[in-house]
Image (cartoon, rainbow, N blue to C red; front, side, top):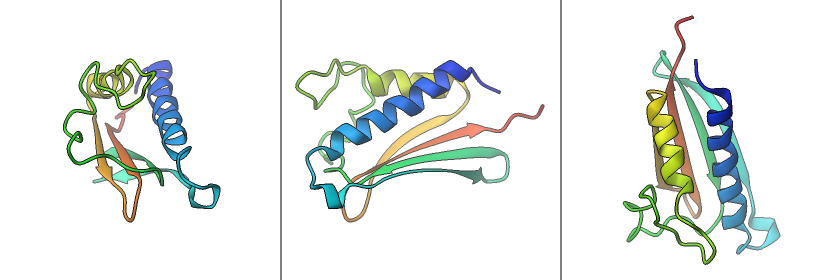
Length: 114
């Protein structure tokens, strides 16, 4: 169970970030994957992966902090709000580098017992 609008906002924000990140790579290298599956039997995993430039290891610990941005026109609130929404739903939002390039954002949400 979750707030549909808030969860939709998180997914749209992560997908939009991935699309914007991939603008710097050539067309034939752009790939966006969105996948859902059960996670450890009692949760749902949503993975959003892109083939953009990836996450800088120097700033990877800061990307979910409020007002941190790598965008020239960004406010640095999107990922902080996304993480807050997911945590308020009892879940986790993490980011990791993809291989050979890109980023992977993983959302783990507890499954409803309804």
